[in-house]
Length: 205
Image (cartoon, rainbow, N blue to C red; front, side):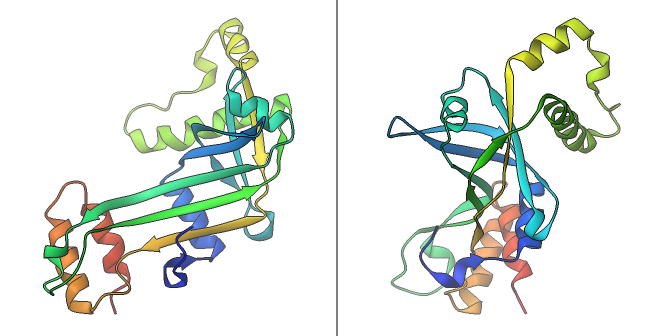
């Protein structure tokens, strides 16, 4: 986490929505004293103190082995982000930086049973297929049962109940309003920065 408290976000509802908006995560654990990481979507379940994160990994993934052995997990979600040029501030003696939005969840994990794993697979596909409309929604029911069962056997699903759940919104809050406006205008003009400019604009009075 960035050490500057002005960038920290702790509202669980805001963090939950940011996960839904950007659910692809880095999932890290410790195996034999070494850090290991995997990339996978993780979906929130429940709200407030009952919130948890569900995800699945390959049986062969080193992170799977670490989690089954009792390692806690750190799950990191990265939202919009972009390089910020000092030229955009309109003031002297500035340096480049990187603006970004992220969410971190850390804590112990438990293995989901077979029924919960199957439900998770359906929930993940429903979540992402909804964004592809008007394409007809893909369902696991379209697969032959034998093939689907074979795929299930290669997966392990987990649930993380966060003991630490917080985020960062590093959006030039430490700059003058005029400098932030210059960054917003510049990011608006770039394909990669458009989403971040929209997030910065939400902070403006």
